[in-house]
Amino acid sequence: MNNGKIVILCPEIVPMDNKGEEAIIKGVMDILGLKEDNCEYHIIDPSVKTLTIKSGLFLHPTRLFISSWRTKEFGIGLSIDRIYSSLCSILRHLLDKVYPKWISIQPRTVSKLITYIKYFQNDKINKIPSSLIDSISHLAKVDYIIAGHNGGLNSDVCHVLLAFSSSLQIKYTIFGSCMKPKIKEKNNLNLYHEVFKKSENVIARNPIGLKWAEKFFFDTNPTLAPDPAFGLIPITKQDTSLLISKLGLSDFFKKDVLLITCAEPAPISRFSFDRQIGRIAKIKAHREFFGKVLNVLLESYDFNILFLPHTIGPTKDLDDRIIAKDIISHSNHKNSINGRCYVLEEDLNACQLKGIISMGSIMIAERVHSVIGAIGVHTPFLCFASNKDNRVSGMIKEMANLGDNIFYLNTPNIESCIDSFDKIYKNRIFEQQKLIKISNSFQKELDIIGNRIKLQILNSINN
Image (cartoon, rainbow, N blue to C red; front, side, top):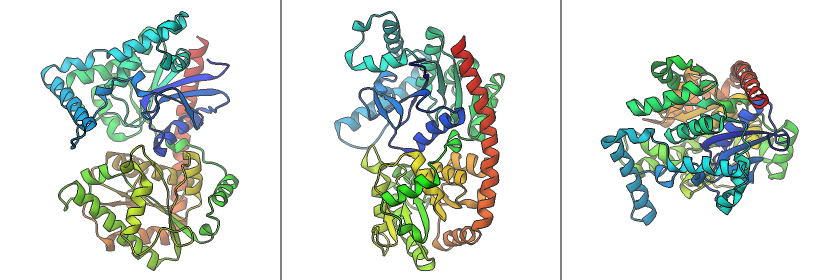
């Protein structure tokens, strides 16, 4: 503990510019009954270079946990950064082919992290790089690890878990993971098996991931529970009203409001608009389609439309606000707070965004965690998605039984889209009642899981 506070570590990359990522972490805290006054929650954020505190969370630099070359992805481009990134990706794939056992070797970065923590515990601070002392001073006091955040449970995280467990005797649990159902290689499976056997819980958030875990690691007793973001408590109605007033949106909300979250280019260009060929063509088709949908909605219904910034970076192509403005530019309308269509610019936290979602009459969501937020506050929604998205098919369709609330963007047309929207909008009371039952059921499941994990954390501290 640190100054009487429980110290929890999530050893996975959690970019705070993505409010869905934040919602998972804050959801875990709410499920466990942890707040800033009794808990320090530590995560890895790729945007920070030294220990940083944001929204009550402690952010550590990625380089402290994971070597740069292990995080780089292949891409097209002639810049030095892009070439380096692609070469790193090629090297990893080459190692997978010629020496697959490399995945089971503890990375040097992890070894150094453990060494630095032991230096701190043995009062040898002078052996720790000055830029890392703040981080190490907190990590040396970790009481418990909660891993499995979103899709982050990879081989690098596995090595961190094993190192903390064996060298520092820190216990851990896996909670909120979508698992890795595409991984079938023997050495990788062996690494996961070792990690799962030592975990106090192996909890998947997606039935597709659960089936993978049951197939290869049945002896670790994997179970299923709703995504921790379902447990995120939004700001109060009163605080939401004050926030809306502060944002200058009080008049905007005098009408019914359709809320929208839009997807980043990557999933659109990979998994949607099947008739289009090439990344640029798919993205263009998406923006044009969404713009036409806006026109029909604004002509057919008497509501205002507010785009919410689910993700604001770190790069321009990941900034929902830019994407939303481009969508509006493909319609016959303007982005104006005094008009009927507006893009919210402010950097709000996940609790604030969930509060605003609760004030909407209906939502069109291309972001899974905005759908999760809508379910939690009982706001009717239509989810735009690809039929190749396992998160949507697993968590929204199978677990929540909300397949009728999904509109697939593989071969979309305006008429069927508006028809799907119209059915939900005209039956909002029924939709709300349906979401209340689902969210209550999910909350009961999360309460059970939360009580179990909290007891394990307290036992770990007391022992």
